[in-house]
Image (cartoon, rainbow, N blue to C red):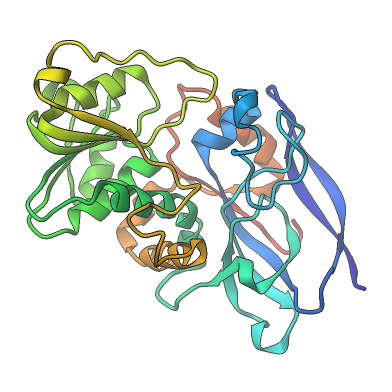
Length: 328
């Protein structure tokens, strides 16, 4: 049995995080030893965990695939990891893989839990795959059609990915909506329209909401056209949200429903596994325009400070990528 040491980020809610050293044990000769090259912070979920904002009723449902510890914490949490296989069966050596693994310098993992990166997908961009998987599930749930007029409220990473995927459907008009005017340049890079909430187009065929705010959700309802559907992608943790279901909601026969990545969309579950869906998400990261979503990289050692920064709503970072070196 091979023994190695690694370092990992642990969240210690509420409001603390630290790096811990741990012993790595290979449990199965088929397992792969992956040396992490990049990971990414899922700002919405990880900062909710960090801040102690997960309701007790959701502790089990909010488990990350390779989480260690139990909520409310401390927990080793995260799910956007790209690395190189250093040990294991010979045909795996040197391959670059994506795994839904926390922020950790090295780890043993079964091959079934990783996706090999296609040649067209660089390792640095592949960290978007976890968010991309959520976006894929959202489109499966919403089933946008050719020619649809679509609004996406909330230009965070998930909203931007949903907008970009929708824009590639023939004839679709996409408008990305956010209160931050600096997100207009991101929208241009993604080749979608942009508007502040007060100037957004109404009468839309389909509206996605991803701002994680009551104001954003009410904007989404206001923009929906007659008999349109609003797809809720935000998760609020312990926060209560007030949505205006008076006014035009009933007269316009609007629909509001949730999409969540924990299960494969009912529209695809008969034919697609979680692994198939993740592999699709990884392949969609070949899009070079997605590089516009990244902030400057940070080092693994600075992760605790970065989590604290990202937990501040005033921080404007989109995707915070973490770069690991051989010495990490």
